[in-house]
Image 1 (cartoon, rainbow, N blue to C red):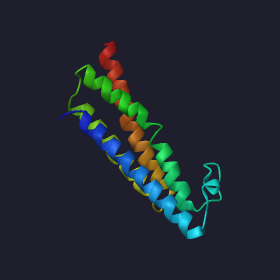
Image 2: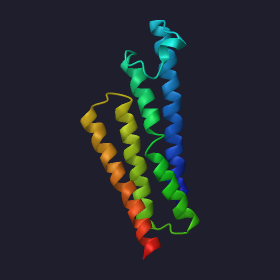
Image 3: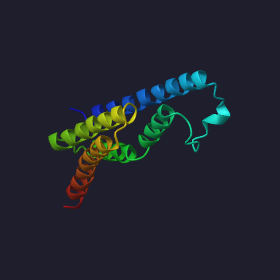
Length: 135
């Protein structure tokens, strides 16, 4: 299997979170008669749905950058194997779960464990890549 498949899945997750973010924002703006001036990212007095969807989208533009980078390096160096693929898919699955929790009921302890587990798989990819290159 190609290492790009989990990358595509991550891109699709980001796309769907982006779509949901705007759907939530426009819906809440209509419901509460908010203006674009009210929608400042620093305005923490907005309804929780807006804050959570925006926070989650920003979150998908942080740590996943390292996922995209390591995946492309693995692809270019032709190092794709079952361990990298399992780690890549596990990262994506836990990020999907993280996003689902973050944008719905947002229980921090649940979200935290999805973040930690996804991170463990990402760091495993990076340290394994470094090991393969150095040794």
